[in-house]
Image (cartoon, rainbow, N blue to C red; front, top):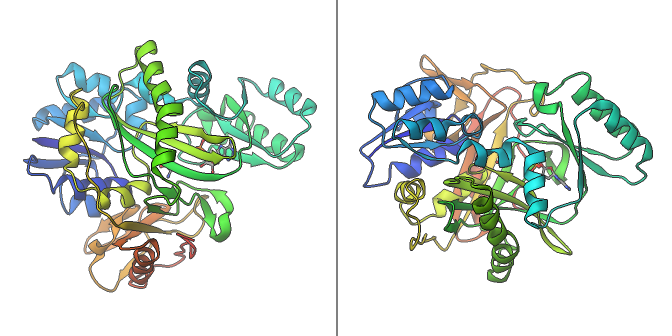
Amino acid sequence: MNVLLIGSGGREHAIAKKLIESPKLTKLYSIPGNPGISSISETIGTDLKIDSIVKLAKEKSVDLIFCGPEQPLVDGLSDLAEKSGIKTFGPSKMGAALEGSKIFSKQFMSKYDIPTSDYKYFYNYDEAVSYFKRRKTYPVVIKADGLAAGKGVKIAKNREEADEIIKSYFIDKSLGKSGESIVIEEFLTGEEMSAIYITDGTTFLPLIAAKDYKKVYDDDKGENTGGMGAYAPHLAYTDELKKIIEDNIISKIKIGLKKEGIDYRGALYVGLMLTDEGPKVIEFNCRFGDPETQVILPLMDSDLLNIANLAAGKKLSGTTIKWKNSFAGCVVIASEGYPGDYKKGVNIEFSGNPFDFIHAGTKQVSDKIVTNGGRVLNAVSIGSSKSSALLSCYKLLEKVKFDGCFYRKDIGT
Ligand code: AMP
Ligand code: GLY
C-alpha cells in the first residue's frame, strides 16, 4: 500500500516509525513532515490545505491517507479524499466537529447522556459578562469553542480572572475566530486519563490508556500546553475501569454517531477526568494524542497500518490489538517561552544520533538541525516498569541541548 502521512509533530514521527514496520507498506509519503519523519519517508509537500493534499495523494496513487493532526479533518479532508476514491484514517468533517467545536461536542454529550461537567455556552461578550456578574462559585473553566492548539482552555479562580479571559477572547480576539464563542464548564477534580480508540464507527478498539502531563512546569504549575510528557499504561487503567468507560461512555458514543449519521473512521481520543462520581469526559479529539502516541505505539505488538486500513474501510469487526507487557515513557524538551511566544531557528546540539529522539518542532538547515516549534523533541523509552522507562528518557535527554531548552523533571511521578 502507498500511504500518505499528514503532520509534522512528535505524534506523526511516532506514527511513521510504526507504519514502516508493516509488511503491507509499499511506500510512505509525508506532508509536511519534519527531519525525523523525512528520514524514514518521502516528504512530498508542505501545504496542509485539503485540496493540495488530495491532489498529491492522487498523483502518488496513495491508497490510504493517515491524518495525524485535527485541522485537515475539521476542514473536511476525509470527505474530499473519499470523492477521489482515497480512504482516510480520520473522521469525516461532521465527526471531526466533536473536536472542532466544543459547543457541538458538549451538546452531543448532553443529548446522549455521556457523563461530562455541567456547562453553558455564549456567542457574545455581553451575555458572558452578565453571566459572570451573577455567578458566585469558582474556579470555573472557560474554553474557546474552536481549535486553539491547546491554548483555548483557561481556568478562572475568581470573577476578575474570568472577566480578563472573556475580554481576551471576545474583544482582543486573542484566538481569532476560535474564541468568538465560548463554553463555560464546572471545574472537575480527579486524575486525568487519555483513552484513545481506533474505530470504524461501529467497532471500537481501545488502545492502552495513557497519562499526559499537560501543565508546562513541574508539580502541574503554569499554563496548559499540548502535553509535556506521558507514560503508558496509565496506572488507574484496570479492567474494571475499562468496562465502566465502555458501558457508560463508548456505548453511548456509538449510539450518538449512528443517530446523528456521523461517519467516524479513525481515532477517537476521549479525554477523561476520573472523578469521585466516575469517569467524566473532558473533551473529544478526532485524532491520536501528542505525546500519548509516543508512548502507546511502542507498546503495540500489532500492525498499525493493517488496523488503520481496516478502520478506514469499515472492516474492523473481529480485529484485536496485541500489547507488549511493558511501560513506555516520554519527556518533551521545549523552547523557552512555550506555550507562549518562543524563538525558532536555535541550533540543537546532539551528542549521539539525532534520530534517537522523536522529532517534533525541528527543522533541517543544511547539515544542522534547528528548533522550529515550542515542543522540539521527545525522549521516548520503554522499560519493565514506569520508573525504568522514564529513567531512560531522562538519560537520553542528557544527550541534547539548545539555548533556552527546558523540560519537566517530574514526568511519571
Ligand atoms: P481540553 O482541551 O478540553 O482537554 O482541556 C485541556 C485541559 O484543561 C484538560 O486536559 C484539563 O487539564 C483541563 N480541563 C479542561 N476541562 C476541565 C474541567 N471541566 N475541569 C477541570 N479541568 C479541565
Ligand atoms: N496531549 C493532548 C492532546 O493530544 O490533545
